[in-house]
Image (cartoon, rainbow, N blue to C red; front, top):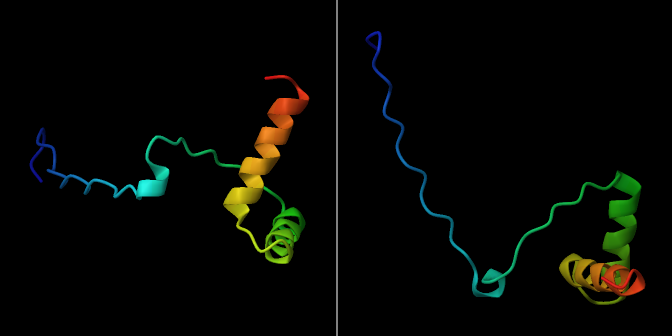
Length: 67
């Protein structure tokens, strides 16, 4: 590459958004291995998803603090 010239980087393809994610915002939470394992087990026991458990937990937290 010549000095003073920038290499052209190809644009990244647009991320595909699934219909269930339209109008929603992602929230990332880092958990220790034991907590993550326990949550996965709870999801299996309740025949639900981690997503559903997370939504339920955040709603309970917001209700608790009146937000």
